[in-house]
Amino acid sequence: MTTDDMDRETTHSAEDDPRNRDILIYVDGALKHRDEAKVSVYDSGFMLGDGMWEGLRLYNGKWAFLDDHLDRLYDSCKAVALDIGLTRAEMVQALEETRLANGMTHDVHCRLMVTRGVKVRPFQHPSLSRSGPTIVIIMEHSKPVDTLQSKGIRLATVPQVRGLPMSQDAKYNSHSKLNCVIACIQAEQAGADEGLMLDPHGFVNTTNACNFFITRKGEVWTSTGDYCMNGVTRRKVIELCRQDGIPVFERNFSLIDAYSADEAFLTGTFGAQTPVAEIDGRRIGSDGGKGPIFARIRTLYKSLVENDTR
Image 1 (cartoon, one colour):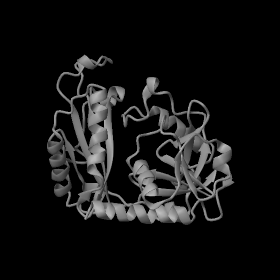
Image 2: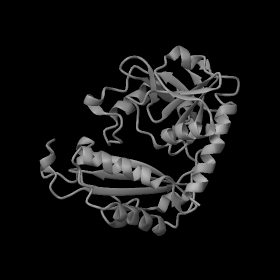
Image 3: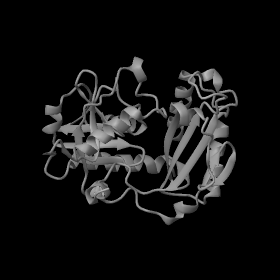
Image 4: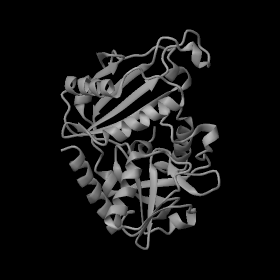
């Protein structure tokens, strides 16, 4: 690994926190030290990427927009006939048990994972998963590094695209993330932090990890949503713009529009809104992708989180 690789930021770059060395992880109802938390090599998630996950943020002892995240998880699992085996109330209780066991209250990131469970033989058919789902909850003390806001993210447009819903719908938060991993690799090979992915028609869509927005002449633009991740933060930003009178459009737009944007930013549960300083070597705006609309959205979103978690 080169020095440049080590210095590269992603939208999930977090401050190092020594408390994470001894976290307890929820595995099918048991809390285990991170060094002892394991799943079977026959697990559907490990073997085939057959599972769904959610990313959650904890503020002031409460999970932000919890109902939205649980809606997405339960809807996705239902769509692929994966029985979670826990009611929503029981899943919330599992989250709370894990949080309390780790003494966590603020600036915490959670990855909640549900797979189809352990297979009786190492093959694809879902009927071979007969013992019920595997549920894993990982919580870490996790705060985005300051440079994400001060420096911004560099994007490179990659060949890997967000595909059609009948191949693998991007609205599933599935364990099958190879499409995104390939996009990330392509971006790194191009010297960027993350990959900007187009849709099947060549319009700008998302990055490999986050939803993508630009501002032009006082307007906020993002993709139509037809091929992009069903982002909770994306939806909140759109709603905030509408409520605050900021013109916002879900529309098709091309790279020429992105290159000449006044501002650009990414949205995601971990980083909230992250400025995009550069796309394909072209500097965005005059302040690393930031500007007055970005600042306004950041303020509105912070207030929304505070109200939701008070």
